[in-house]
Length: 172
Length: 187
Image (cartoon, rainbow over all chains, first blue to last red; front, top):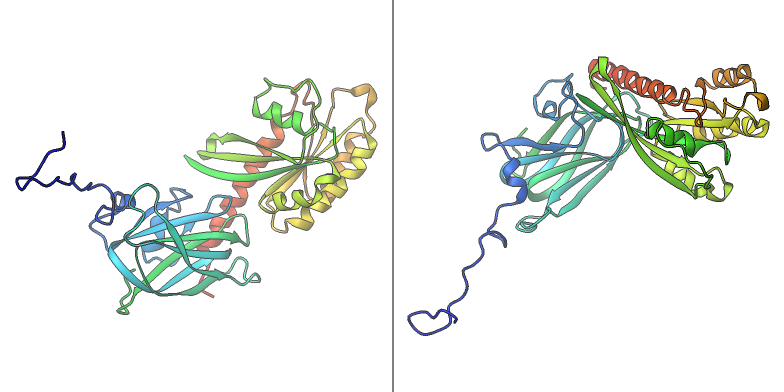
């Protein structure tokens, strides 16, 4: 029998807390709560050239890809931000796709990634550092995926990733 | 343990033993396909080679590509994603050796930045029927800067050697690049 409220109307079932707009994104559990920006995951993991190198501020350390493309690295932010610009320093990337997770969606199952911008790198710059600026039009997200979809060499690398929010502050 | 991933194309005329070679490598000598079944378009296999002294595994994604011309357009797409290659010929078949150079040229025309490759003369067990002497294979390989091997997929002799060589060459190329990348400055 359906439970009734004191006023006699049919009570609604409790609102599920595990989905809908209120639920945390499944990526949240990978975030480092202490840091403004953290690395959530990367598709190549050489302990000598780990993904964390892209945030360490060192000029000569990098995250290396270890063969095969596409290769991806995912950054997470402490809170949802609006991204004005992303700058990357890399080598031997052919094409770079920057993607965000659609806000207040995708809280069940896999996150829904949406491409914000694609940068085609110059093909005559093999084995030279590439410094690129990617305009992000103040899109809001808590997660940023940077995918190397084409390369100039069997191995590519990213030295650093810098993210500027819509207030002009560089978060990393 | 470090994991490298290498997409590897295996090319050559029909019936030289590309699939048999891959099957024997993959099964560590346990599985030789007794009946010839022509590969349609392409087949895909994966197998890991350990390089213990460097604490590294090289995971090969082996693209077994049909030798039939019917699949030319598809082959190009598959080749584009690969980093290394093997061209196989049959040591008892002069024609397959003559065509080996065409396969090397086709690969190099599609992939300009490959890490390297190997030329393999298969069916070395059929000694009385050999038409292509070892020296000719070595010369062709040297001309194209490839490693050279002779093997018998049937007997399982020297089947793993080329793949071990390729794994080491891939790792060396990776380590060379890492050294270069660590020395680069903003241009």
